[in-house]
Length: 307
Length: 255
Image (cartoon, rainbow over all chains, first blue to last red; front, side, top):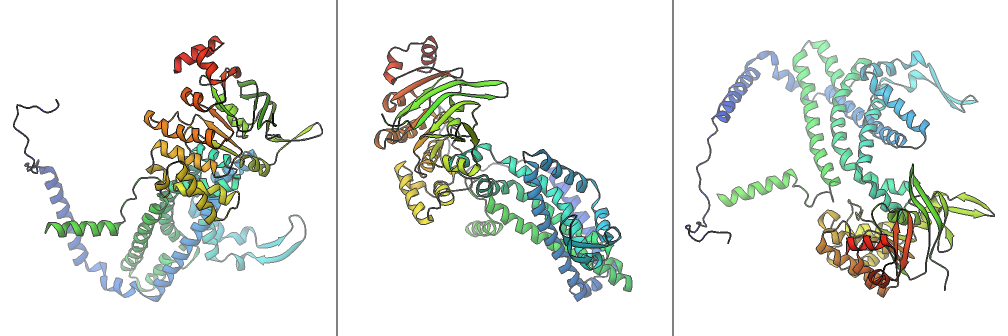
């Protein structure tokens, strides 16, 4: 017998026990409330924040144009970075030692130097290569471009950020590839799938589960790193507010304008990342986690039932 | 007797300094079911993997359905096969793995139609109908939309068998198909395999320790040890009077 016959039968109703007290939690909560109140008071009463100026410039054309440039730069640089990263990762896994070491050297150079320096290099590229031409290597040339007309500050910033990002993405993609079991490749091969088909249909989709979360982080990080291109006079979000406060001397409120926009875009990106991760998680766990909206709806329903 | 489906002549294979296959010779007739038994490390799985060129053999010759595996012979010269030709040959050989190796991001149905649609270029609707029929045959009609993680080991292995059958293979290779299963799930997989052997007359080479399956479904049993086939005969021969001392030892350990 598992249960004892002699004892009183256990009552079947719900347990109502006195909860353990946690005085430490109350003290911590009180400290945080006090600090929060102090911060709120300062934000509200320190007139040097100049909230009126923040409001005035928040939706101004110049700021919004800068925001669009920042978004474009983020999207294009990440696209370049991901494309280069996938190519480098595949090269890294190549059986040809020359191909795999070329990938290694690329990563070594671009990860080993500061991105700000790389941006400056691309900004001053015309000092190194005054013109570019398209043609047969060591043979005839067909089209000529001057570096300054081809590589505008925006293009320089995009190339610098994208090429740099490629080095980081390569490692992320490679980690994704090696996270997929070898048995998956064998099963695909035994069904007669070619190497390319196996990569595209079997390995890549499953590697995505490992690749997506750090790529989301990289995108968010890229959004903020784009602010460095202000050094080569690309009118992104940061450089746009710099131009304004150089004229009006309202430095702090304009930096707040830029910071709030960066925060807003970062929040939107984090939200998007959650849904992309959820899509690629299919098949990896028995039940997909709720989306924030589903969670909210369920909480509301529970609350409704209890009231 | 018709031409053999599989013919091996003194096949050898080494991994680095480890000599795994030390000259395996064998013929398997069309429709024949052959079980390979033997201790782990004896080379059974490696030999199976050589048959569809997942491993490259170092010496000897291996033919499937009259064609050399992995090579093309012109006169007395051997040429390595191109990747596309290797893939074409593999598409005609089904393989079932110990660890199932179902594609984790695809449902059971998607797993089964993947190769017919993308390798054989069968229309998706047609492939879907065939896949449903195959999944019904392995007793999983109600699991077509489940992901592998939602299935038990036995169910996963039955999906894997359906996936291999979807390519209409002329030869099926089973690499310890029940070794990774909980004991009570072994039966459902063996039943499916028995059906293949007895009702559909599929040519099968099965690496297994399930002597019960061998007795009911196999035409022939091979005992491998240390990279060689040391004894072969009917299942009854192995039950009644195995000849080699090594075979007796092995059988008493697994029965």
